[in-house]
Figure 1: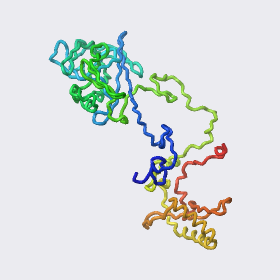
Figure 2: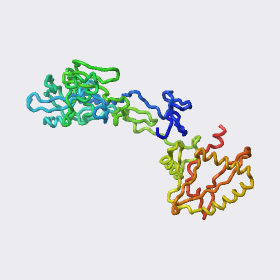
Figure 3: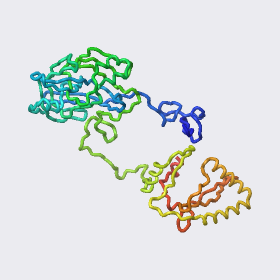
Figure 4: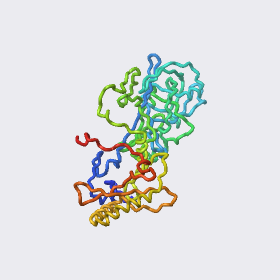
Length: 437
């Protein structure tokens, strides 16, 4: 803004977008701005599903859960059905454990973490089962526990848990736990914020309640806002907030879990594992292509391109500047002032004898300085490297009334020239065939 850069045409001339006369059309939304400045304001829900499915012989266990992590004061995230609860065995109610429980209606069986089994000393024999996710099936084993009860955090509800299966890769996405600060940021949820407990940092997610405990999934009450807003549900085990709770629709999550696990050879995603025995043809022998006669970039070409990528920029006046691509580990250039002065004397005498040519050179140089393509060289210390570039005039065969001044960068002094210490760079000129076509 301070440099007068136009956000409509991005041109070098200083002006504002409101005064811009250029017709610009966005290739994305057809709006009056460049496509590079297009901002996608649509709310995109990036939801990834991870399905767990286990079985021992004929028993099958499936589970789905989602994670989206955010960073803005604990509210820029996606919340799920996760409630704090107390777990105890029916034979020893005095020995209870506070955990977070995931209420997942996409699971047909309830699961528990290894920490849960260790806390209650459930050293039962392990049973083998198959854990199925979007990336395939994995045969694993885990302990089983029964006779446990789950009690809501406020003690108003107590349910008998079905047989729990140990899951060593238990989902522990604490960012999805709805807490009180989430409800405080939505006006239609503020009156129920006190019913949602504060986040307990020392409590982990250790239980996943599936459809085998259907009473835990009954919705007793619901509170919702407008389209796309999160909603609250009152379940027997507590109040939960579900959905994206980021206050800004443009919030970009730092991490997202998705169920895309394989990339095929053609670049397309697949949830199926590719066959390892498939043959892939990388190079076709004796097959002619349009790129056969093209030269690959050399090492110096790549160095030159990297140098331009790092230092090519727009200056404070709105003009583009590029560095001289000096070769690495080059010899310093000698001071060729004597040679440059001697070469300048000859065209100077020629211009004095030809007033028309002198005027043409003056007009050409005035245009160069006026457009900002050249400027007067600032003084430099005597110990600093310098090189003077000789100039000479060139006439176009069809334009006898104008002259063009050319810099002679191949001029040598003490067996050195500017071209010898510069990288050539890649050949970006079009070939004759490309021009004709």
